[in-house]
Length: 267
Image 1 (cartoon, rainbow, N blue to C red):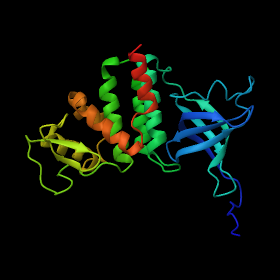
Image 2 (image 1 turned 45 degrees about the vertical axis):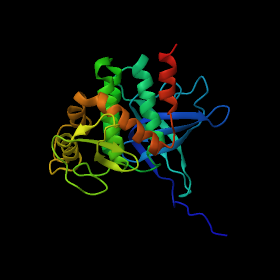
Image 3 (image 1 turned 90 degrees about the vertical axis):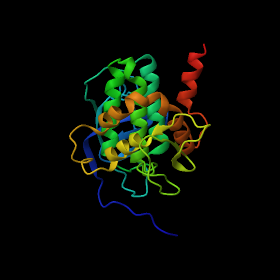
Image 4 (image 1 turned 180 degrees about the vertical axis):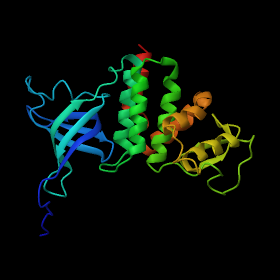
């Protein structure tokens, strides 16, 4: 029987920027947290005693709030759950409310479904932190463009976007004024009469340049802001395409948070 590998000594990670995405009960007094960290990706942490009324964790471990975490890695290198040792609220904004709160939970669900454990995505973390700040600022008019921009960044960081400067199947160059759509099965292709939300070739190439152009890494403006800048005017056209693409990769016809939004709108 193969023996499990072990770390020679318990390692500790300190002052790690993080957000709580989800939590569930581990025992009568403790929680398992699913957190998204900047340098180590998505992690599972056990917060011992967090449910006790006297726990210092209780008022801090809230979703959509920027945190600084300290945790120790399990001595078993095959273990997926580590131990939370400290948590501090970084501050900077209040908890989103209303539609913004539901939108924040929607972003959390996307991260839980599409980002693998312990796979670092600093640019995606920064985009998420930026999106949460906007949600907390109650800029309702920016909500839909913001969600579309974050969806683009997430799909790119998760490796789920094809090249956007040519058609996917036949590698044909795109024409500036011809409409193209992005589909889960065939990637980017010329729009047909029955397609919804097609966008001109010049727009797709502009988005491609943000992710892959020579200035993509050198550009000082955050990635989310750059994507938002080219997506804001066409957010409604993108909504249907991105929904199909996300549901396809999430393996769900309807995400839980999206269904909740729809149910509330129908009340």
